[in-house]
Length: 500
View 1 (spheres, rainbow, N blue to C red):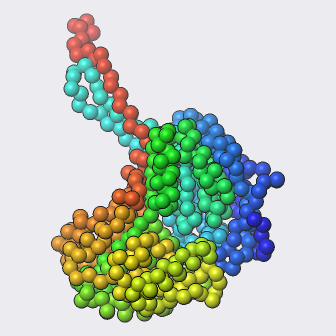
View 2 (tube, rainbow, N blue to C red):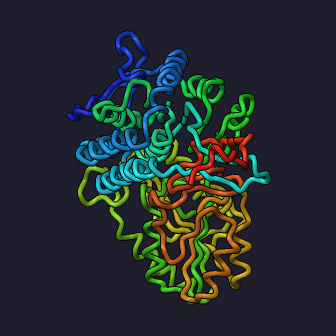
View 3 (cartoon, helix red, strand yellow):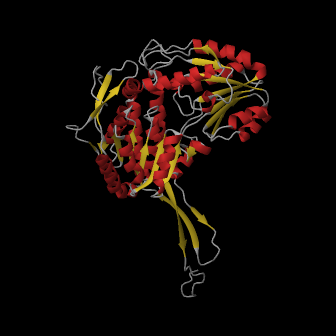
């Protein structure tokens, strides 16, 4: 696909082909695809589309680089990661401009993502020096039981478009810290951010083959290499549950270690003893950040009957104040969705909910700003059986349900196969413990909507995935445990050997 409208973007970090073995794949003669700005459909750049053969080359490079990278001391790897971290921080503005241009999020949010992405590199640079083993009391005096941890090997990953920087660093940072080499296929919707990371990794001195980035329109074919090549020891994926299940099956033939961060259906519960203003503010952050396009976004708002009307009134007032526009406009709160298909999907869910009896209190119609924009919307009188309460919305639409009792709220929240994130607001300490323990989710925000940070374990339960990203637990996913049994230890020494 060629660009029909080119809007030049001056940015030294724009690269136009995949990064393999420390170099850029030759662009000449390769198929190119357009990277479009969702706000105005202008072409940000044309990027070469990598082939499955290029993916094999990337795995070759990672495999060849593995022994020397794994042999470096933890301190040496940490020092290189810290240089990479500092370069990302120093290029914050240019990275944010790229993010906004290709993904659409407001510039302030883009800068926050750069900081968030960099924070994982900093965290795991520090954690690289804390990969501890164990000694275990032996059942016999002539043996010693020792446990060490070693890098799992070559790691491959497939990452999404909604947080194109952070979703890579959240995987690459622990992999490199542990001594693994890394190959990622970035989303074709947002390849420029990923390639910019590769440029900065090269400038940081990370050796050739250690960090490789593939961008391609041949997603299925390139992905096939990354989930089936037997040289790859671990595969990590962030994306939909449906795709994750397919990829998980493919990794089974080579019994790869996997981390899967899949879809969610996050409940946001507001009890009648909550601080309503605090809850509304939290919901605005959780629901409307990145135009509702995050895996931990609130999907269902469950409000206790006694405060239902008051909560809705305050919510609608807050939503109606949001400014919709291009991400590079200073006043913008809500940018475009990633593409026109996403807008149509969200609009169809809203229309279906209204047909089923929900009431539209705000928004809910196609925007005049462009084909990728959708207004922030609020639906009341939503019921649990409606599709909008059962499916991940991935757009700026709040669906509000009513409940009577704490037990009913917990049952409604858990009535899903998803189990990524949940939120609830209450001032009752006993309720905090009861509800926290009863919710079947990997992460729970209590009177708090901003729950993700590099020190915390990010991940879900049930069909929302497996493994954890971030925190000390996130490093374990890139390490293998090896048990060493040292035998033949003599307990007695001769008198001639004994020294006093």
